[in-house]
Every structure is written in C-alpha cells, then in structure tokens.
Amino acid sequence: MKELKFINLMLISRRELMNDIIILNPVFKETIWGGERLKTQYNFDIPSCHTGENWCISAHHNGDCEIANGAFKGKKLSWLYENHRELFGNMTAPEFPILVKWIDANDDLSVQVHPDDQYAKEHEDSLGKSECWYVVDCDKETKMVMGHHAKTKDELVQAIEKDDYDSLLNVIHIAPGDFYWIPSGTLHAICAGSLIYEVQQSSDITYRVYDYHRKDANGNLRELHVQKSLDVVDVPYLPQQLNYQCTQQEDMQKVNYLDNHIFKVSKVNVDGKYQIENHEPMRLMTVLEGEGFCNQEKITKGMSFIITSEAQKIVFEGHLVMIETLLGGK
Ligand code: ZN
Image 1 (cartoon, rainbow, N blue to C red):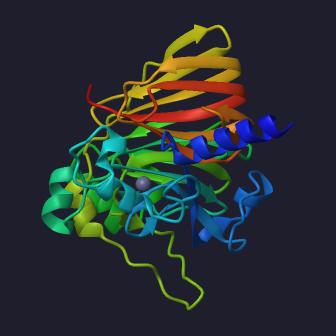
Image 2: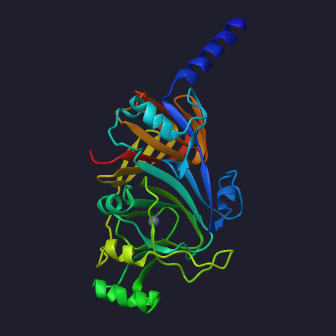
C-alpha cells in the first residue's frame, strides 16, 4: 500500500515537471452581438449573457491566455513564448503567430475585412489577418456573408455610398461542420445564430465597412473604416475552393481542411487509443466533444491546450473530437 502511494506520488510529480501539454485558461470578450451559448452548450464560465468571444489559445496583448497547469501555471502564454522558445521548437516568429477563438454570434457581426501582413505592418504595426472558421453549431437557416458581387472598385464604392448592401453582399447558408477559409482581403461577416471556432493570425485588426446602423448601449454608432477597407478589399471576390484530405487508422479519423502557408487545420476523431511521434514545433488543440487523456493529462470538452515540441510521442486515449492547428508553410 505504502509503495503504491509512493509510485503514485512519483507519477504526479513527474507529470508536473513536464511541459509537453500546456493547458490554457480562456479569455472572454463581451460584445454587443454576443450571447450565452458558450455557457449553455460548453459550460464555460462566461462573464455575462453578451459574451461574444472566448480567446482560447492566444498570446495577443488584447487577450493573453493564462497557463492552467504544470511548472508555468499562472504565467501568460506570451511570457512562455518569450522565455521558453525551446518548448516551441525554437520557432523564429517574433510573436506567437496564431490566435484561436470561439465566437458566439447572437446577433449579426459587422461586415468587415482584414488587411494582409504588408498593409498591417505599414499601417498598424501588426500582423495581417487571414482566418478560417469551423461551424461548431448554428440555428436553422443561419447565414454568413462571404465576399461581394461588385466587379470593380467603382461598383463597390457606389454600392457602399448608396447603402445598397442587399445586392452587394454575397450571402450563403451555413450548417454545423462547415469549414471556411477567409484570406485577408475577403469581405465577410458572421451572422446571428452561429457558434464558430476560428483559427486566425495573431492580429486584432478589423476594418468595419457596415454595421447595420446599429447603436451601442450609449446610443453611439460603432466606428467604420471605409477607406482602409477599400484599400485592402479584394475586387472582384474569388470564392475559395478547399480540398479536404481524409485519413483513417484504427481508432482515429482525420479530416485535413486546410493546408497553406499560414496554417494546417484538421479535425481529429479518436475513439480508443491513437499514438504518434511528434515533430511539430507546436500543436494547438481544442476538444469539441468527448473526453479522455493526452499524454496522461486529462482533457475534457471545451478545453484548449498546446502540445509543445517537448512531446516526442503523443498518446490520445478516450472518445475525443478535436480541432488541431499546426503552423503552415511546410
Ligand atoms: Zn473577421
């Protein structure tokens, strides 16, 4: 009995010394369009019934996630990236490059566009913002704005001046499980009724084109950035075609949605045990459904964590549906 206890203690303390799995606490954002789905569907401890975003993997200064486990518990992710780059395969990016968030749109988000790296560097001293969305859930008949119908910049300017968004915007219907790639320069908007998991570059630069003439609690309109939007928006809009790659092994199914110069994003289903060698500088993980273990660390629905380059081997066990994001460009 004594021996068993001793072995147990040894296992716990060994786990606590390891930095292969970094679990993160979320940062919540209250917004005029937010809701309470993050609590009702994912049991997150949200600050109010207007919670629009959960930044679940972020080292951005506007929402820097705190580490929830291990030797660096209580430190921020930006601190870890700055001071322990060896855990990230000695990556050379000066800042942690990716930001992952959940978006609960109880109302329509503004119609917006993001700049590319070059424009953002020049005008905002920031990374640009390309993003992708996995539709976790949505109401029936939920829409999304993806691109526009203007053939020239003049046509676009005229439609904006005439407030003619009904004919300008390309509106599509979405369904749970859909995946979209939204490169910088794409006019877009998430609409009411959507619960979205978003992987984006670590940037908070948004140019609002149209906000439905909405006023905030103090009766003020939100600022628009029409000129900057016109500078960066792609005309004409070119729809993005994605080719999903599926792989299957015993106890594991994977759908690779996107593999480009910025990210590689996949959905991984584990039902049993799945083991791999790890050669990635980091893997950004979120559990969408189920529970289990990753290298003996308990993981549950809604949890986000980073598998660092310290993990030479990764063992998933349990029933898990996860989104995995790797750095692109390889
Ligand atoms: Zn956006």
